Length: 209
Length: 227
Image (cartoon, each protein chain N blue to C red):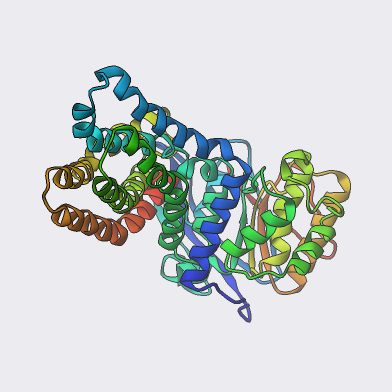
C-alpha cells in the first residue's frame, strides 16, 4: 500500500445517453477519509463510481490517483481498488468458499483456504462456507460478496449500495470493517440510502443534483 | 500481494469454467446431443445409399460441428456478465486478454473437444474409411478451436444485446466459412486419394492466427460492451 494514497477527481463530467448527469465535479479523497455520494435516483451516483473504476468514459475531466491519471496507471491502479457494485459477482453453483477463492484469484490474490474461511466466518457465514450459494439468502450472498473486501488488500474501496439486503448486525459489521480500513490508511467512497456511521470518522458528503 | 503468472491465471480461469460446467452438465450435453442428432438426420433425409453418404460425410459433419458450436456461444460471457463477474475480471490487476483466452480454451474443451472425440463414431455411421476418419479428427482438432475463438469475438460484441443469441450466429457463421471449406476439403482430399496436408496446414495457420489475435480483440470488444 502507498504511504499516503490520494484520489483526485478533477472537473469530471459524465453523460448517460445524451443526458448530462453531472459536470464540473471535483473533489479529493485521501487516506483515512470516507465519502458518501448522495443524490436522488438517476442523479449519477452509480455512474460516478463506475467512472472512478474506468467502466464509464467521462465526457470531460480526469481521475488522478497519487498524482497520475488512472488511465496511465492501468492495472496498477486496479490492484489498489476494490469495487463492489450492485451485482454480487458470485456464482450460484459454487460454495461460498469456492466463490471467495476464485474471485480473490482473479483479483490476483493467492489466498489460502484458511484465510478465506476466516474471512467468511468474520462475515458471519460460519457453517455456511461449503454450501452452494444458491441456497443462501440475499443478505448472505451479499455477505459473501463483501468478504472480498477482507482478503483483497486494496487502498480504495468503491462500494455501490453495500448495505443492500443486509440485516442490522451486518450493517454494524460493515461499519466496523470500514472503520478498520480507514484507520489502516485506506479510503472508501460509497453510496447508500441507509444511514452508515463509522465511529470516530466524519463522513464527507458529496451531493449530486 | 503476489500476482499470478500468465499461466497461473490461465489455469485458474480454465479450472473455474470447467468447475462451473461440471456443476451444470446439461449445457455441455446439449451441444453434443445436438451434434449427434443433426448428423444422424442426414441419412434419414437423403436416403441410405452408402456411396452418397460416404461422399458427403465430411461436409455434413463439419456443418453440424459449426452449428452446434454456435449453440453454446451466447453463454460464453453472458453468465459472467449478468452476475457481475465480468466487471470484476476487468477490474482485476491482470491481463483481460489472458482471462479471455482462458475462457476460450475452457469453452473449446467443453464444446469443441467432445465433438472431436465423438466424430469417429458418427463417421462410421456414414461408412467413412479409416484414413478419412483420422483426417476428419485431425481437421476438427485444428478447426474447432478456431470456431471458439472467432465465436468469442462475436459473443463479446453482442454481449447484453437483446436477441444476442441469434445475432452472434449471424455474425460468426460467415466468418467461419474458410474453416468449413478447408476442414471439409481435407476429408474430401483423403477420400479422393489425395494428400490432405495442404488443407490441414491452412487450418493450422488459421488456428495460429486466431490464437494471436482473437483473445485481444474479444477483450477489447468486452470493454466496449461494458460501457
